[in-house]
Image (tube, rainbow, N blue to C red; front, side, top):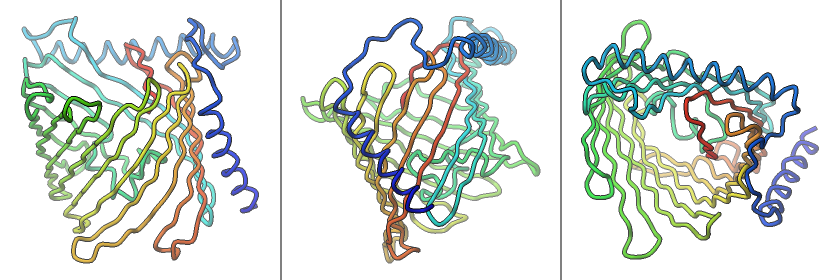
Length: 335
């Protein structure tokens, strides 16, 4: 069984790699969908109804708190995402999970003060090894990870200055878990060429979990109209783990056409500052397909791991995932 599954993983890698260079750029048709007509006729009303509910609910709450500052034309990034995934790793068997992720964005509470309700903040996603590089969302690892808080934003363009954000609120669990966090972002154009460097930095304190800090540096450039190269370095420290973690990622993003994309990644995850060691090397290919009009997406993600706790012997892994997005504005978000 293991050899058969490994062969399927290898086959998926080869098929994805061949598709990346064989598929032409396809024009987007108004009715682009892989669903049969009977399924599309049921999905559309459901998506429209829930999407409108998400948008109207966030705007009604925004109007209540915003008062005179409220404007119906303000951009609203609220969304609800439902996902179902099946995950398999060699030696560990198959696991399945249904995930719910949401963000209620209230942009006009004040000119620079924003009320945020979010289900999955960075601080609750565990270690870098647990978080991975997109294979598993694991939204349900801690089912009490939602937060309610206020963010104060500086009106700065991160291309010109450091853009800072201060936040405070509570984690929605018992006992109540207050938090404070500071986020700073910056984006540089490197010379006159296509390279860009982006920095994301966050310092947080949660009453029940203590302090945490994360910095991510993303260096990349477009290689063509449909290909983008990135090198991402992340360092994280969490008081409850009391160890320094770091990850290095090299990835090539390739947009195959208006409905499909591929990501090739090589990832290394390590820990400890005093005696650094790599805990996991792995290769990943992620194929993402817009199954229906920018609201229903499917992922096929084969991986090959070399982990320290298995003496770096190769282990295959595979994830299959379907996601459905509910939001006012349809966004064709590939990764």
